Image (tube, rainbow, N blue to C red; front, side, top):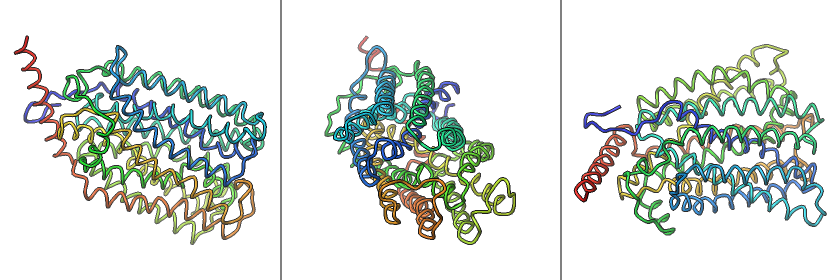
Length: 489
């Protein structure tokens, strides 16, 4: 696509975007697996709930600290195999080894080595995870710079994750838990091996997708980038207002999701205790797939036409309205009547609201990744620096520092109502305290995150028109560089 000034956009083939989106799916597969690590650490290894929650929060902060370091490494890398492909493979390899070793051996450690062992294995997993996830964000900038094409990543990414999280929920609640009578050692052994292998296949597809674009001519201005120093992180964050606002938006949303839809403990409380039907969790994830898929297609089409910023704002509002409906349904209705065996008005309303919520949430959350690439291009527009690794990991650094408190919030919340030595389990007795803690985590936290996003977007200037201006200037810089090279030749 070319605009009125005849910009020759660096466009990717649709299959390349589709394959590269698997990189985020691969790390989400691993994240889904690690969402159950509390059950392994407390139920199998024997560590306390509060200790594990505190450790996971501390390790999340460590995760944030590793981001700028690895982003710096990415920006310094440009070997014969490119900038991103080696980092993706290094990241996956570290994750696979650390996770499989932990889930298969940690419970055998001497008592005094279990906690240090957990910290070491989890730290290694984080380092690998950061290597691979940093490439998802940074690689966007070289894959395509066409503003109308970048939302395609969100389409593929949201659809893949919709399937993965739905399948993962069904796998955990409908297969693993019933087969082994809970999340036992044998359950986690099979769980970890299966998901690590799936992530490996998706990683290979992602490397294939970015293969031909992982070259210097697709990096920023198309010439060797000026040297960057570690202290440049401060100037980038200070001078790039859109990045600041995107960080606020995404970090608050991530914190909300860490304490809501992506947290296995909250799902156990909601479906396994409040509704008394944990098997419904996996089934609901599958039921919502097709309607959510349709909404994702509509939402990403909207983003391609009107810009990512407008799409994020629109679908964040729709998410808020949907969750107001969820709150009313759970508070004024009878959650125990939500069942596929009792297909009454409660079940119909629950399915409808979940379909809408999954779809709207997938769009508003997924559109952030291509918006990071917009911020990277904006940095090139402002300063001439092409630092996608720095941009992506600087974003992740602040994002993770804020969202790191998600696990602690859940841990403290369940400890407050009496769960100090074990996590809530399917079939535990229902109490009003459990109900209101579940409501606060599942609905209240996302609401706060979405409100913060809407405020942040008021000050985010990279709308559709601004991004055209950004790409025009970058194209002029590239053309000037080519003319200079030809003159020297």
